[in-house]
Image (cartoon, rainbow, N blue to C red; front, top):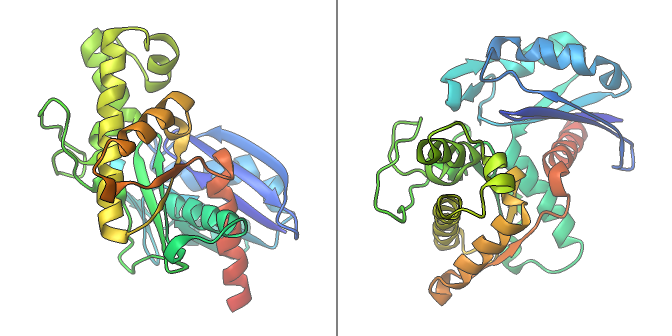
Length: 294
């Protein structure tokens, strides 16, 4: 069996997969990336060692820039030798890839089993705490040695109101700084004058003019990002995932915004086949392939 972990800024999910690729058990805990990154491997071990003990290998999908020996967590400007630390903790082989790349791999495998994918190309965009991306081009998951590949949250987009929004990466108007869950919550807090998270905005304040305008700004950012992705990769399929991306009202608005773009930028905006488990399935497929290479 293979044990997989999905590390995000808000939560850490884990699943034990059977030899047939089915989830046998799942568990979830809160993340500590923003509070205490150095504690991350210990939190993972303490939370999941019982499930992991049943597996022969561990696959990890994580936010951040994944290098050969470290993961660079841009949002907290710190790095961690996560693979070696987890291998020491669990005494098992560990394989790590970016979470959005994992989701792209999983979604490509799922969709390609149902229909022919034009040019064997698919782009996955996750809109959650941040914005990330993964690209399968000509049937191959695109990665790079420096780990900074398909980080679509750092593609710049125009804002609806023309304002400049500074991103933690040091640039202005990155898609993540305008359209992510964090960006939605930050703007909502500024506009309402009291703390409002993205989740609270969608559940409590969408009937207000301020709430609708904030969502429209985020939707515009993601639609413009999709247009850029279409121009770069030629993809006809964009899968929209993440806690914000899978919400019905957000995905419908993004689909409509893409339809209103010039025709050359039109793509099929799909919901994830694996729903919120795409990262876990991607880590499973990635680890299974790596084990075959050993």
